[in-house]
Amino acid sequence: MEDALAARLRVMPAAVVTGARQTGKSTLVEHLVPGRRRYRSLDDFDVRDAARRDPEALPGGDVGLPQPTVRRWLNLLETSYLLVRLPAYAVNRTKRLVKSPRVFWGDTGAHRVGLAYWRTTIGEEVDFVIEAGGELLPIEVKATSKPRLADCAHLRTFRQEYGRKARAGLLLHTGQTVEWLTPDVPAVPWWRVL
Image 1 (cartoon, rainbow, N blue to C red):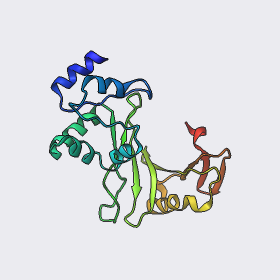
Image 2: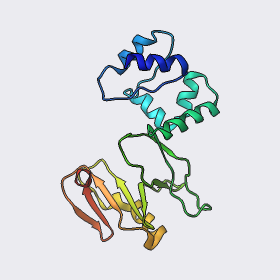
Image 3: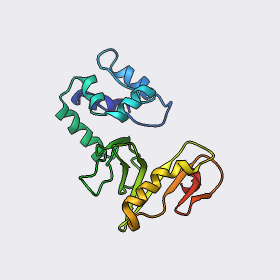
Image 4: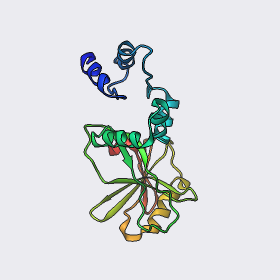
């Protein structure tokens, strides 16, 4: 691994090292470029949060590169499935929705699927929208073991907006029970659907 990374660092201004946690990635990078280059670890929650919120600002500001270069590199990361840009779901372009994509670090072993999120300018949000066969499956994820009726409000708003095209909403939670919060929103433990 050391030889392969050293070869890439000789020709590339930036490189991404990925792998399982606690396997020596940071130690390897520090060994290869002591004091000559900066690196950022996504194990640092602040750095990870900054990368999620504005990935173009994190590489560009830290390495002193112009935005077009950073965009080109982000496109390369996306092409290699290391980075996933999740677009906002919107059919009506005149509706006041947030349309900037979210960014996730990708799993190179996963299949690419049609996936988006939905958010209005007033803050109504559905975490994931899966579109397949002309139908939409809105999914909300809540870090609670006891989901409540209020937790599915945005799923119901989404379903009202898209009518018959939207299937029953799905609320994933951390608890143990499967229950219908409303006739169109089941609450299911996240581990039961994976």
